[in-house]
Length: 286
Length: 206
Image 1 (tube, one colour):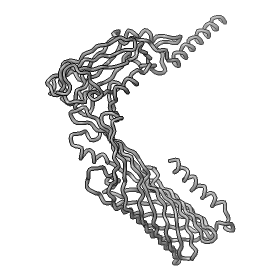
Image 2 (cartoon, chains in turn red, purple; image 1 turned 45 degrees about the vertical axis):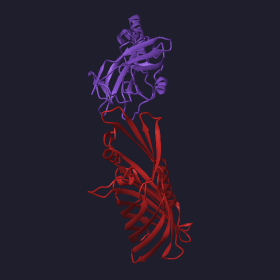
Image 3 (tube, one colour; image 1 turned 180 degrees about the vertical axis):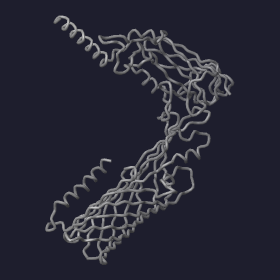
Image 4 (tube, chains in turn orange, brown; image 1 turned 90 degrees about the vertical axis):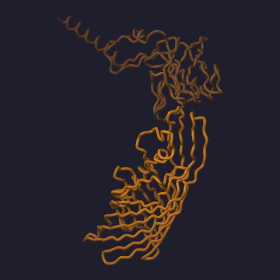
C-alpha cells in the first residue's frame, strides 16, 4: 500500500510537472487521462493432486468479468522521440488493481521500442476447498471465514510498438515480452481430527517463481483538436497477456504443537493463463 | 449568606474531585491469593471445538480435561478489596479489571493414569510429552495448536491474572485409550514446595 501511495503521488507529480512546462522546453507534449476497464482471466484448472495448487483457485466470475477497474494515467513526450507513461488503477473495492510505468523510444515516425515495469493484483479464493475435499476424517479448515487473499504479480517487459495516424484516428500496436512473478505470500490451514484430539496446521509459504510472458496490445484513439491546439481523445484498448505459470511453495506441517514440524518444497504444475483487458480511455493532450 | 456560598462551592469541588478520581483511577495493585486446590472438569473434544461437559463419557481419541488451580476461598471473598481509593467506588468511566497475583508459581504438573491406557501405558505411568499436550487458558481458538509442558509452565505463571483468582489450563491425551475406563491423577508442584492433588472422574470410553 505504501508503494501504491508513492506511485499515486508520482503520477500526480508528473501531471503537475507537465502542467507547469511550456512546449519550448524539454517536454514537447503532455497528456493526462482517465480510463475504465474490465479484465477477464481464462486459465487451466487442473484436477486436484496430492498438493494444494493455488492457481486452481484464482477468482473467476461466471456472471460478469473477473475484475473491473478505473484509473488515471499521465504521459510526457520528450524531444528525440522519447515517451514516458505511468498508469494506476483501482478495482471496484478501491483496492489497487494494477500500476505500470513505461518508457518508449520511437526513433522512427511509425515504430519504436518500449520497456517498463508493472504490478498487477489478483484474488485467490476458496483455496481451503482442497483440504475440505481431500482430508477425509478431518475438519478440513477450522477457520470458518471466507478464504480470500490478494496476490500481486510483478514484472518487467520489453517490446516494440508501432503507431499510425489516419485523419483523426491513431492506431497503435504493441507486443512486449518479459518476466513476471507473484510476490510471496503466506497462508495457514488449521485442522482437527473428527472424534479426536489431534490438531494440525499447514503453513504455506510461496516462493515467487518467475515466468515468461508475452502480451500484445491493440488500441485505436479518436483525437479532436480544438482551436487552442488542445487535444481531447477517446480510445479503446484491447490487451492480451499470455503466461504459463505456477505458484510453488514450501509447506510446513505442524502436528499437535508448533515445535513438531515437517517441511516440504512443492513444485506445482504450470497453468496457461490468458488475461484479456478491454479498456475505454479518455485523455487531454497539450 | 457569603459563608453558605463558600461552603457550597467547597462541597461541590470536593465531590467533583472524588468523581474525577473515581473515573480515572483503576487499582493496579494486585490482590494476593493462595493456590491451594484444583478442580478438574471434563472436556468434550470429539467435535470441531473443545467445550466443558458434564458427561462422564469420552471418545477413545478425545480424552481431555480442564484444570483450574485457585484458592479455596470464593472469588467473592476478595470483593472488599475492589472498593479502594478516594473516589466513589461505584462511579466508573469503565469497568476496571481486578488484578490478582498468586503467592506461588506452578513449577510442575505430573499426570498419571489410574487405569491402563493401552498396552504401552500400563497402570500408574507418569505420562510424558509423548502422551499429553496442553492448552493455556480455558479454551482453544481456531488458530491455536497445543503446547508442550515446557511452554505451559513458562506461560502459565503470568504474575497477574485479571478478575478471577485462578489459573486454568487444559490437557489432552494424545494416545488412543484401548480400555473401557479412564481416570487420571494430577499432581501440581508449587514454588513453595506444596503439592496440590486432584483426580479426574472415572470416564467411560466408547
